[in-house]
Image (tube, rainbow, N blue to C red; front, side, top):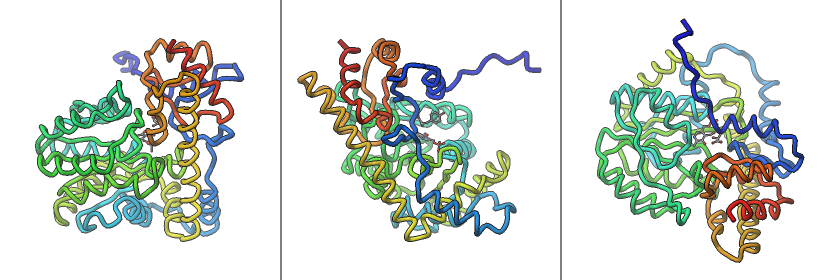
Length: 394
Ligand code: PLP
Ligand code: TYF
C-alpha cells in the first residue's frame, strides 16, 4: 500500500525551529516561528490562564462529551469579544475548533460544500498554511496584491482594484489584524473601503483572526472584522486563542459563520457541524474552558487584558528599538517601517542570500522570506542584530 507514496513537503517554519535547536552557538537569535517570547526568551503561561486552570481543577465535575460545537460558554464569550454589537447574533453561529488552523480547515470545507472548487483569494504573500488548507479542502487559490516590497507597506490601491473585480462565489481571505508574514496592515479608512467593495461585489469575506490584541489593542484590532460584518450579508471568521491567551499547544480556536438570516444560519451551521462530526466528532475542552473562565470572570479578564497589553507593548518597544538602532548605524530611514508595522512579524525584504548569511555568520534565524518574529529579539542585543542585518545587506 504505502509504496505508492512519495515524501510530502515539510512545514518550513516548523523545520526552522529544529535547525535553531541544533545550533550550538550561545549567541544565536531565534526570529523564526511565530511564538511570543518574553524578555527571558521563554513563552510563559499567562497568570490568568494558570488561575483559570486551578479553578477548573477544583470545580470540574465530569469529563463527559460536550457536543459537536464544543464549549457553549466559550463560543458565546468569543462572539462577544470578536463581534461586539457589529452584527445581529440571530445570523451568527459558532463552533469551537482545534486552533485557528482547525477553524480555517472546517470553514474551508464548508465553503467547498457551498461552492465546490470555488476560488479563495489570498494576500500576496500570506501565511504558508493558507494554501494547503484551501487546496486540501478542494478549493482553488489565487492571490491579490498586498505587500509593496519597496515601501514595506500595503499596496492598497492595487489591492482594492483586485477586490473590486471579484464577484459572488469568490472568497476573500483577509488577515483581521497583525498580518502574517508582513506586519503591514490596513488603516481603519482602508478597512472601510474593503468593506464597501465586498458589499458591492458580493464576494465572501473570510477573516483569519489569529492575533486579536497583538497589534494596537483588542478594540482597534477588531475594527476591520466588525466593519466588514456590519457591511455584508455573509462572512466567515477563523479565530485563534493560541497567541492572545498563550495556549498554543492546547489547540483552541473558533469557527464563526454569519449568514443572511437565522434560517440560513441554521442550515449552514448544520453543514458545519456535519463536517466536524465526520472529522473529529468534537473538540477538546481544556483550552475552551480556560478562555470561558477568564472571559466570564471580571477579575481574571482584567488580569488577562493587562497581560495581553504587556506582550503587545513589549513588541512595540522592540520594534521602535530595532528601527532606531538601524537608523543610528546606517544614517537612513530604510528600516523605519519596522516601527510602523504591527503584530508579531515584520517582513524585512532581504534577499535570501542575506537571510542565509545571517544564519551562517550570526546565528540569526528567520524564515527564508526574511520574516522576523519581533518577540524573539533579545532586548539587550538589539544593537548586535542591527549590526548583523546591515552587514548582511552590504
Ligand atoms: N492564521 C495565521 C495567520 C497564523 O499566523 C496562525 C499561526 O499560528 C494561525 C492562523 C493558526 O494558529 P493556531 O492553529 O496555532 O491557532
Ligand atoms: O507563522 C507562524 O510562525 C505561526 C506558527 O504550520 C505556525 O503561525 C507556523 C507554522 C505552522 C503552524 C503554526
